Image (cartoon, rainbow, N blue to C red; front, side, top):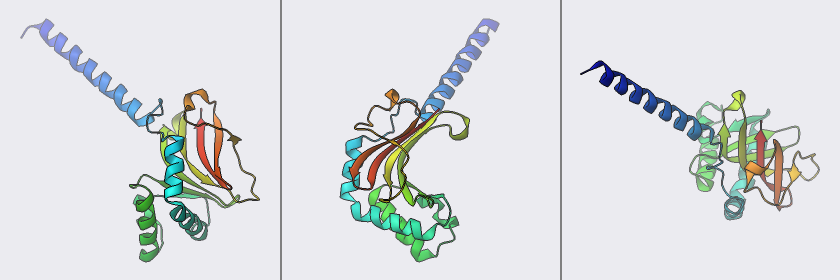
Length: 175
């Protein structure tokens, strides 16, 4: 094998590794919002599982004294007894296949059900989309918007689309 063939081979391997790393980065950060569910899908999910959303909201407010997130995969470390963890798992699996994340804010008593996220957490821009509950008398954060299906048009901030009183589709974008 000649020296030029080796250099061409190394260049092709390097190019392949570079393309793979870029593809992995785009897949992980989802800058094109490909994982974001449509507004219609979230509304249909909420309406089909209204009772489960209510039960999870009540349970989360009872069980978590500080702001935290709850996911099927983190329940083992939660400190909850087995029957309570099983109740969470059952309700979460009824709504979603394990991707749903619940966050609780006890200052406002709001509860978020995050369906999809993108971005690199603390290192750069990110986004999340889901459903949020705000009690009637809370100061909710967010701009009321009629359509959250085109997030690339939105600037950084919190956006809400009403589903019914106290329940909203949520889109949050950070820069």
